[in-house]
Length: 261
Length: 293
Image (tube, rainbow over the protein chains, first blue to last red):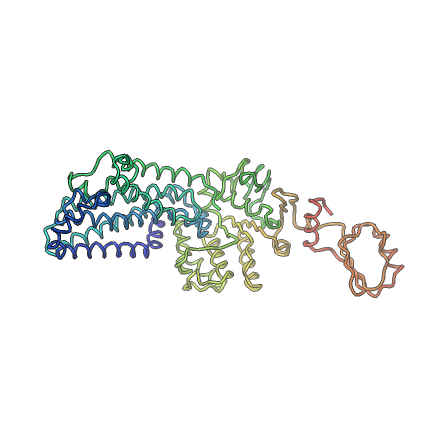
């Protein structure tokens, strides 16, 4: 537990900034809803008639005039991107930073096995992701109650669950990548998260690119699908969780054999 | 049982040489020196022994335990002082020491406090604000606070002022007299000469000599310094000749009789004949690839 505690302490500032930022924007968005609702009739029609742009953000399947529809798109963009960046960045740095900042020598000359180091570091990443999601979920529900809307429990919970799993998948993959890196983890983490996001936009626009939804975790975290179907896409989720497990396994495999510079 | 024992330990970084067929034996309780220039393989040896990198071939044991299989058991009984001490930024000195102790699952607070006091290290400072020398002190405390059976030191004195160096070696000698084995890697020869009982010299990844410091320093060469005029032309066994302002100095390993003859023929106001220091012998090891002078 020493290392988990240490990592949480080291990552505290980044965690606080990202959680506060995402929470703040979710709050703002929900607070904007009552005002927008009255003007929604026109806007919904507008949003529904922007062709590929509409499809890219799943607005063809959603009614922007309801809290669920509004939240699915807004939350999808804030928590989806923000959470993905935070998870990818934290996980990509968790192993690589030791070598980049040259603290690996200190850490690895203590009687702690590499497996334990990996497990504790991974736990700290997961704990941070869980923490962020719990707080943002609380903020979302709280702000809906505050603006006097009825909370669509099932949809909101499913959406948040999907984003949570998306973040876990990205974190797992980035954790694996991290074991292979010595520096530059930040760029790779953010780049991967952004790439996954755009893959999903492409998949939304073109039917031929539908298969991309199985590659990017944004596929099963698509707000419009979740809201309209009332559940997560099991097969996409399964593929995603497989990627996560493979990423983590690659991380363990590599780091236990790595020559530390 | 030896404190450190390696058997043809070899490490290549891809094709680049690290260490080749290293055979080293350090007995328990020794104060052992490990000398070599930059890039000779000193740090590679240490990093392989500590399991930071895995050997390409060969075996090694520390305190009778295998360096690959029993890494954790070894690390819990060894203290290591890296040549470049880097710590997690944002932590105070005290917190770094506590973290190190926690990772060892030991309470070392009393020993840490005593060491900090002797080294005049302020526990409340943040590590990233410390000078190189003060960071080194933090590393020293980390290496010693859990009272390990073996301490491995990689160029320990760089950055320490002379008074601190003395205090540091006092601490090491005290530990050594209580049974701690000390493995000191350095390119500062006087450190090795003053503190170690035995030493190994490493050059281009291979051990080229390993003996007691006394034996390593023993040579039939003398450092001769002559004030005045003397004709040395044609005299065999002269090396490292320096002539300046009527003073000439050289290492002589030829027949003493021949030298004396030349000296009597010259006009000399002063003369000294002394044992060369380890530095000079060391240079010789490097230049000639290890033949005894």
